[in-house]
Image (cartoon, rainbow, N blue to C red):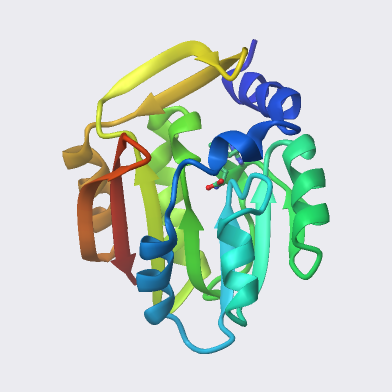
Length: 198
Ligand SMILES: C[S@@+](CC[C@H](N)C(=O)[O-])C[C@H]1O[C@@H](n2cnc3c(N)ncnc32)[C@H](O)[C@@H]1O
């Protein structure tokens, strides 16, 4: 099966139970820091938004205009129920075609590692295109280079990631300035976080 289709079907399957799993990862610190770089009431895109909690909800609660996209209709259904104030669309993050210079912020939290790593360069360049001048982006990668399918919450799930040095290079080559990049432990899980500015 096509990898992105496998991810979509996997998340459709687990959308009901995803939130109880998600609660163990507290990202409030990262979100608060990121929001400080955004203009008041700015426009934010949440890529691979999942069920809208906690990320989309955080931006709505703090007065931002939030658009969420996700490949899984099941996750989007939950997101629309959870955060009715935001707009949600079904898209593959590889093919986003929002206008140039449109968003003040773009976040992709725990999502890009489901997309074949060969496509990360295209995704990051596209984020750069869609961000306004001085717009900010926050991405989360697995710190271990990997590729493959394994069990996730009882379903087959596809994962793919470069090692941090390569992800960092892709961000810089796309034209971003890095604000911080760090391997952070959240919920006893290590992830490589990158915050960068256009
Ligand atoms: C681990 S969840 C994280 C959800 C949310 N960002 C959060 O922090 O709770 C990963 C999400 O990425 C979405 N996703 C995976 N591949 C995608 C793709 N190619 N395009 C858009 N969304 C994708 C999944 O459907 C899922 O909702």
